[in-house]
Image (cartoon, rainbow, N blue to C red; front, side):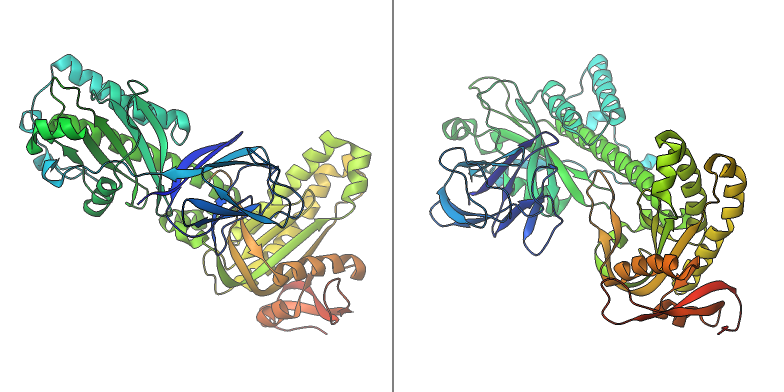
Length: 519
């Protein structure tokens, strides 16, 4: 059955995919209950439009934005808070991104009797006894052609993965190396397949693909290719059937994350069938694409993780990336603030201020990471950190308190180094709070934005604010105090009203590790 075809073209984003059914939202915000296309466009609203397919090839488009009308290709713009029904195709503009909605008929399905396969793709190591000579795969190319194939595969594997140029190289290789008329790189995200790149010998080629064949390679996890001669050349010529080949691309978790798909059209003369060795080369290209993308993803992920997490956490997250998925979790939050940052920056100027703050942040961050904390964010003169997520830590409140005391212990060394430049001693306020929060990655594949959300985070920030009012360096909330009372020496600091909190809150000053609580 035909599906809704979606094409997105923007300054930082270009993609094409089919949406099978149900409403579809567009905006900068994260995924919600309705499937979301996250737009990499700063001029788009967090929630911009919702599209719902209707019978008879029509769609209802609702403008979710509270401030921006949605320009249409033809006719007046769709005002905020309104919806309208349109016939397909329809073009609309979201921020600086052009979105085209249309109907896409599926490509022709190959006859099952004409499909053949080769040995399953190798995932992991390959033992010597598994190796097969090229002669057993069909027609053997001359040595110079085989060398050219291998050189192209190696070059593809060593090129920069992940972007349109990389996928374009892979699609072109299907045409130029294998001798196909069309080469396509298909990617699968959240169960939806899209064309990442396509290359054809001319503009008369059919760029559609068989969803049935894609479903087959996903189910069987192996390469399939077609010899239309098995159903008769005469029948093939009458029906205009192409010979096709498709090979799975495996992701970092051994899932089918994409496919290389190629076709060769019937020309009325010459062989059209895909040969076993040609299918093997397509599978080799697919393996190179998968290995390159997996390696690039792993490197990008490790670099992102190492910015925020301890080496132990990085190792655990590489082993189980699903830990970053959204969930409700009890956490301990640390919020810190450099006193007098505004006056400091005005007096020292941008360059010197950046040097001082960078040195300070590096030392303080090391103390947090040493205690297994996750650095959520830097806010110029402050740090927001978290414990007990993404990996469970039974003693998370104790770890956070130890980090807070270690951060304060860095101040004498920082002042010895910078006081001649700064003038006044550097002072730090830290607030800690424990409670439930919604934690997860609300960023994108380009930039990690992992952290907590909710009242627990806001209260930690308010507790930090109270260190100024009460004149103490480290304060803990009642929830944190309850969890560390037997481990740390604390002292009642006072009961204060905090912004955004209905009832006054009793706060304790954190003094150091000890068995008793001072009053």
